[in-house]
Length: 210
Image 1 (tube, rainbow, N blue to C red):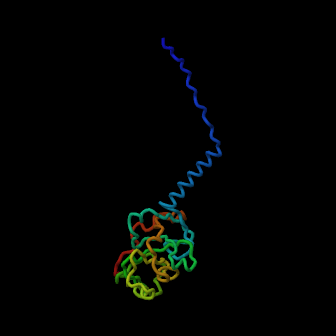
Image 2 (cartoon, one colour):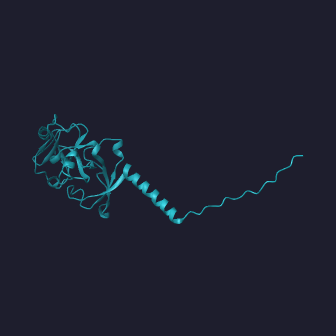
Image 3 (spheres, rainbow, N blue to C red):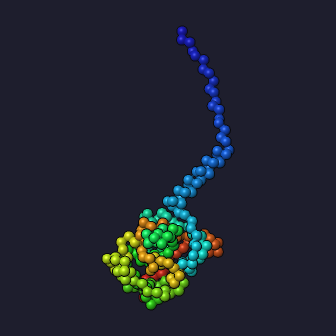
């Protein structure tokens, strides 16, 4: 006769009570990881330290920088971009990021003359600048001075200018921005509240002889 073994009642596992400080540390840690991940790959906040982009951007404006979209498309003329210092700027001991507007794309011939900007011999109608530029510049002349065998913006590089044309340290001084130096595109101003909103929801200018 087979003896039936008596079943012992299941023992309920004792629940371990987590130290609230440990829980808080885990939550903070996870939040930091997520925040850093978003900042590194998707978007980040920046503030404007100078007047080089006035009147579009004012000192102490707070912006959201889109770091994702340039993985799927190239920078376009009119984009306001944040970029790390180029090799030339690093030699001048610049360490902080710059913010300027893209004017010249790879292969473009850019000239500044008579208070106007010309791209491929066509004047830009710019409704966002502080004042007309009081200087002259051309990619042809700049490239010749730098020993660049081209009359246009080099491949995979961009010419950028500040909207405050006469008070901006930009491409007409130090040259072009390599694509791999561009961090992202300024898309939204979130401070101050009275000027909160999207930046350049439509092109800020049109290529026109008017």
